[in-house]
Length: 227
Image (tube, rainbow, N blue to C red; front, side):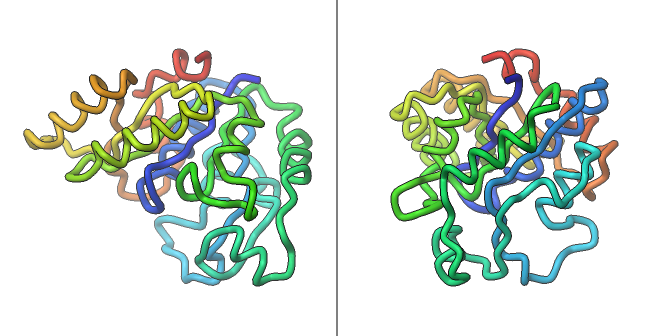
């Protein structure tokens, strides 16, 4: 299936924005896009009107019903394995894979957003990395542009390749209009040491599908989705 799995170096590194930008750009091309997030935590947290919850944001970008994005939703802002345990509803990898197949069967392209980083546990024995491997999609890594990102990004690349995942590219976000010497060097260093293509996504003022599509159109999607 044509698509990608979007992960990140950490929670809050821009993963949802990158995934939504990719989905919106594909939809703007005329593709029927499916978006999938295996588990969503923190639904009890107050939402920002400019940046809705992940499932709502992804659904708006792809033009689909939010109810079909995340098969598991939990209130506490904790790791999905803990959230599921607290809710008395442990996640079953087989159920997640079945939900993915059901919800993406009719799509031209699919964008999956992980939960946190690659080594976040969905269960005590099944990590986000294992889900990415089972789905078999090229990996896109969202990372911050500033200090510390070289180490975090290269560790994520290594963790992915250790599981024989195809790393299609890295997206540094939010990328400033006038990047500093540090940010420019971070991009070049990750590209050189990680032997991976590094693109950028600008800061967006709000979760508007048109703005997301415009930003996502600047990513090398044809190469990445065919990786």
